Every structure is written in C-alpha cells, then in structure tokens.
Image: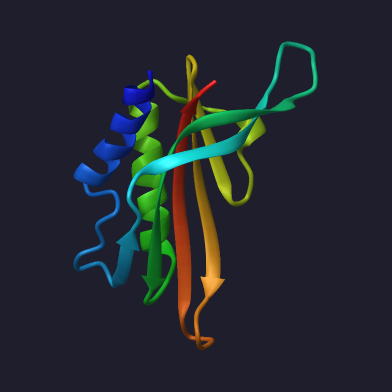
Length: 134
C-alpha cells in the first residue's frame, strides 16, 4: 500500500499538476518525501477524533503574478483527478485552506497557504499534497 500512495504523488508530477509554463506563475516543487499528518476520523454518531497518518507529501511554491485563478485551477486539477478515481470529499478534513479526500483506507489532503514575499507586490502560495493510509 505504501507504493500506491507514493505512486499517486508521482502521477501528479508526471501529469504536470506542478507545471506552470506560460501561466503567469513561476514555481518550484519539492521531492516526494515521507510525512506524518493529522486526519480527523469520524465513526457513525460519534465526534471526529484526530489520528496520525504516515504517508508521503509533495509541495510546490508558486509566485503569483496576477490573480489567484491559476492557483485555484491547480487545486481543481488535483481535486478532479482524485474524484475521477473514486475519492470523495471528506467534510471533517476540509476547511478554508485544506481539502480532504478519502477512498477506502487512502486519504489525501490538499493544502493551500498564501504568503507575502519581500515586497507587498510579491505574493506566493505553497500548495501541499499529503497522502497516506489510515
């Protein structure tokens, strides 16, 4: 199962989800690496509890030159890829900055963090994808 999670992130890179050529954005992405992250798990009729998940992650730092529509497009591409393959949105792991998806025992978080650069006109975003098995 560990290979399956790793392969999912490799596919994101190969399919160009982290490519911004001719898009008005510049970016760099990290290598795929092991990560531990928190996942909220709910059982029927009970409050969600935090569990620790071991998996893999990849991130990309994007300099935004213009509006945020291209960044939102990247998030949508990854979201569509997951839902097209049977993943469902997990409401307990979705917030203003994160979208959670699950399929059987596989879980993925798409996290978007906005940051200011050296000047007020420099705006960056960090897009992080974490996937693991619960």
